[in-house]
Image (tube, rainbow, N blue to C red; front, side):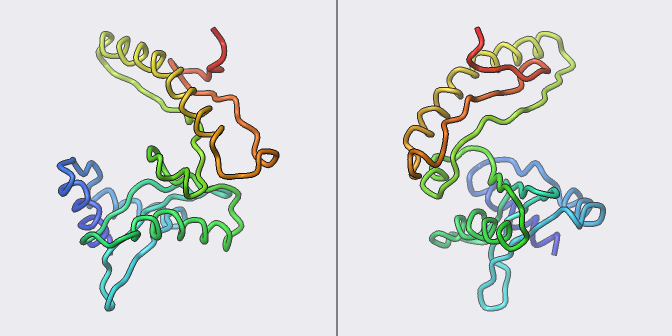
Length: 179
């Protein structure tokens, strides 16, 4: 199964001229060592796996990000990566579903953007300094995007408060509204 999943995952990158950074050995290793924390959604057609979504779970959250497909099928990405994940969370009592980074198309499907932390370490001091500078400059643009997206959310205005974005930069969490 992991070979099939890797082939589907790799195909998406190959079609888009990207680089599939996760190897088949990676998938086999997490399948062997973290099986209780992996949720794979398989899409079948005529008893053949045609697409998959690879998710990780914690006690209360499902984290999605990677997917693969053998060919284009209208709306299959949304079904495997979003709707099946929502269903899984509801069925298993999970509190949150983080469907992955990027994608303004997620807003129409009920996923509003939130700032998430990241960790970076670069051996070369000059590269590290540049990365820290970029992250600092990027903060306000990300915060503005989040505020703008939340101001146009599809929910009742009294149901969803607009968050104050926070993001990890330079090793610590900073409030993006601080100067």
